[in-house]
Length: 265
Image (tube, rainbow, N blue to C red):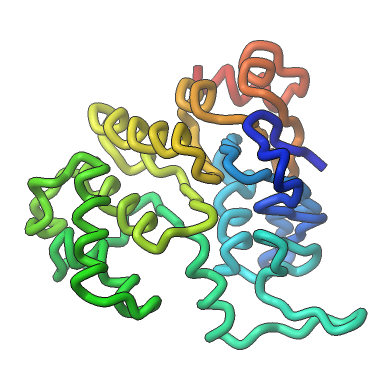
């Protein structure tokens, strides 16, 4: 089992995320084959690897957007998707799953903003509808977050009026609006033109500096070196190597890690 090292909080030894022998298959194809790792509070784990290695599926399992076939995932000590009774597990009703999912922010590749809503409405929608936050308070908080990602002058704009980088920054603000315990980023820059990548990575770097717990699936090696406490490389549904960023990038030991880095560096 890998364990992210770095900015661990000694006062809270319990992992913010704990995955134990997680398996996931689609038909006869095993996408995850016994993945285990711990992530401590306030740490950043970057997951890297070739397309099809299981990275995005792992994120979706952490958020219970996909049900695991075997293994267990806990977030802040709570088993995701299930209620244990003795030696048996019972699947939670969708309402309870959604309640727990609200504690985990997720930023997708393709933004997934509501096209008919303004930036302000996109960011304030979930706190109002899911957490029942007062409208005025939700919008005040949304405006603060919109400014935090550098888009204070775009609060009244619609997604179609924004660049891809700006839309992704709105998506990050929207995830933050729910005050999550953890944020998952699924290749947040893969759909962006190269000149827009930096503006999104700069925002994520700032969140890492602020101590927000994050798991980031990315091919951006420079970003991973700067922002991550730990890098894990996946291949064919397994974590084949993990460690501190400098060690992983400068002195990888697994041939699949070396092969991946030779393609992206």
